[in-house]
Length: 343
Ligand code: UD1
Image (tube, rainbow, N blue to C red):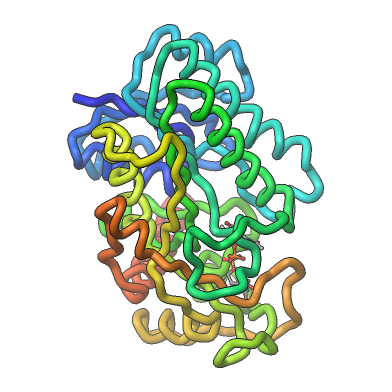
């Protein structure tokens, strides 16, 4: 049985990926510092799969702890999710972002080199393309100067991987995620935003739940069919499965270069208003929303050309936007029920 280390394995995308790994027969060891999630997620993963993954509460910034982990554990691959991800915050705390998102990447790669480990999957982002000149966005689109420190950590992360995989016996794949949403079918794991959500879907579900008074739609004067910004929203379970496909590509040595990168999206763009309408329809409710000014730093439109990912990874999305928005709402309702029971 292949053993896979998942850093940030109790986070939103990490937990869904751990479930898919276990479903596929991989043995999983998780490292997470619990800075943006709860230990209860471990129990939820066990509830879904019947297996409790090995868990180490380690902060990857503590190099000594990372070294100790690798002295005691051998793994066949690493999927590295652990990172900060708030775009706005990254502008106020650049050094924290560079340390946490890039310092830890270097530590992990050094340990891989020291212990002759191979096969590394990196969480990258479509943010590396900025506002692409052509839509849908292919992997050939140029990487644009990052608009945020967070975005820069993803770009530099990819460069570090490219250089390290050139110099050492290391194979790596960066997955450039579009917008991950939704929750597992079991509604046992989902997104757990801290404080006021910055991303669209958790803000929508919290507004529907009455936690937020109304949703602000950031701008209706974009050059898009209905004037609101367009994104490629991918179900988190489909995204999780892309990691398994990428990992297998490396384990079975089907990769064509030591460093590769792929777009992971659905290939379809949806506007903010389309998301609101679909959310209302599938969940049979009305959302309170108003149009406000554009949000600084937002681009007009981004959606993936997934041709290369579909062909090379042998992977494609299976879930619909409707399913994703339905599961997001069920997850929100479940959180509220839990809170009421605790009171
Ligand atoms: C953001 C990040 C991106 C990151 C991704 C992670 C920016 C510029 N980009 O993407 O780097 O990888 O999150 O999920 O922040 N919207 C509203 N009202 C809201 C919230 C959002 O109208 O209350 C709109 C936004 O203007 C945007 C769309 O909804 O058009 C999606 O926003 P969001 O979920 O924050 O994702 P991105 O901005 O695409």
